[in-house]
Amino acid sequence: MLTKLLINDEIVYFEKNDKYKTVSAGMFTFTPFSEHHASERTILAAILSKSNKIYKKEQDFNIYCQELYDMSLNFKNTRIARTSLFNVITNFINPSYVGEDKKLLFEVLNVLITNVLYPDITQEKVELEKSILINEINNIYNNYYYLIYNYINKTKQIIKQEKWLRNR
Image (cartoon, rainbow, N blue to C red; front, side):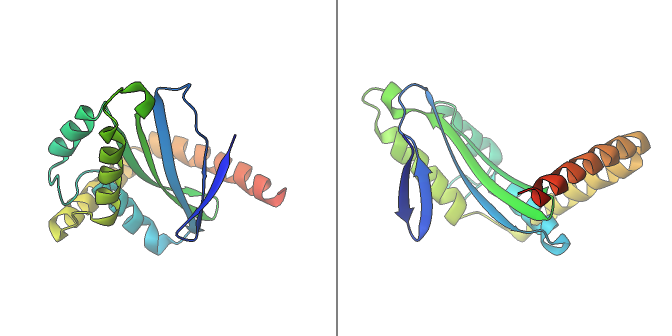
């Protein structure tokens, strides 16, 4: 049964279920698409997924997540029609399957809160992610066949999304 909660003036839905060994939780934000903010959000997603104030290096953060029963934490920025979608998704083991190790849930929540509320954003990291993004864009434009293939597929997706939006 789906339960609805109000936390900090935000509606949160959850379903308690012990059938699965993995718990998935996500937060999705929808905003009108803006070309000005698209690259900023992409860079922010890349930085948030790599480090925080506690684990400054990506490798240390990955090792920590592995120790928490292979927990994952993903940030993504994407576009759907005229909407920008920024999401945070985490997967971790269901506390019902870890026996006495109930502190695990609090560890996961700590990692989430630390990553989202206290990111380790420095000018060097922003510049590095900018250069990575620019290189990826240049690689796409330098590959003429990929560019045509990608353009055709994106056009098909946009047409499908526009039809879906008009029929809502």
